Length: 380
Image (cartoon, rainbow, N blue to C red; front, side, top):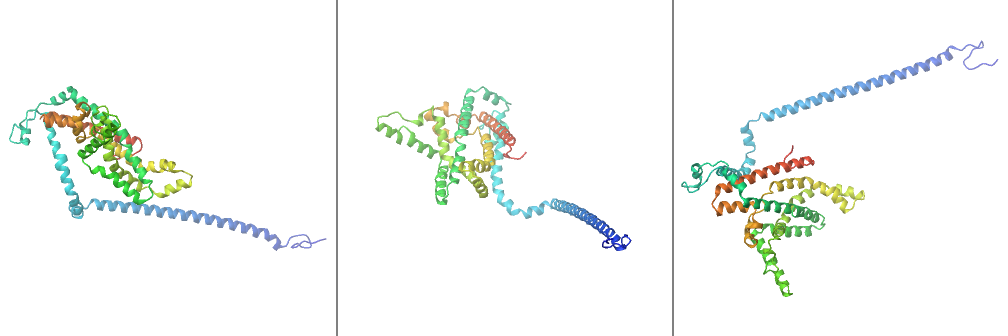
């Protein structure tokens, strides 16, 4: 008979051999209990951290609320002394706005009167002595065909300038932004900025010397047998002529805002797009133009709000050359009726309607900008 390890001669197991499975089971049970204990400790630790974070969050909110309450409790005299330097810096600008922009609004009351500046010793006291006529001036405006001609010319010129003038500063800003050499960029910007500082008298004179009947182009064509060239007196091309003058004078100045927006674009975006295989046009379409969208939306809203103000001096200087029919806009119409004819009440009524329509256009354009996801002039 063969004997196995740990067995007795009679075939029964020894106590040590019988206890081995029991020890293994006990070790397994102890390991499970230890794992459950570790899991319970982990849960307890996470719960403790969550409670601590919650308490810390409540304490932080309480601290912010306390600080906000403390800020609200600062007396206005203390804030006045604290910010007196900033207030003194802005005080001249505020005074200019009040004197030249808000005080004259009180004079719109003459739109509801038959105002006569000679009824009293001065024009201000004449307001209190002029008779009230209600909406008579507005009725005259509606029935005046010259007013509607001025409105038609103004809207036509605004639409033309919006299409031909507004994109030019954006294109110039993109072009200058692509110039690598700083010196070349600075020279190009200086050349583009310079016409903005010219008066309209000088701008019209320059165009007269180039495109007029006695200008350089007309003389050159006359030397080669062509006569009759004079764009400055062509009524059919007048709207394109004034648009070209506005582009030459103010397009360079308009790129400043767009260049400032482009300067805020991170170069990492261009590098990442280039690493993904985007060429120059793709980078402009997917990186540059999206960065300009908020600025474009803001300037477009402001331009639409100023739709009925396409210019004054520019048209007044050239109205005799092309005629009143194509050069009369709302600004020159108000000047002609108020200053030339002395009908101040009627001119004030036209100006009041023009300003009210401008405010409505700003609100409508800003609402449209919100629908496109842009901020516009103000947030929702």
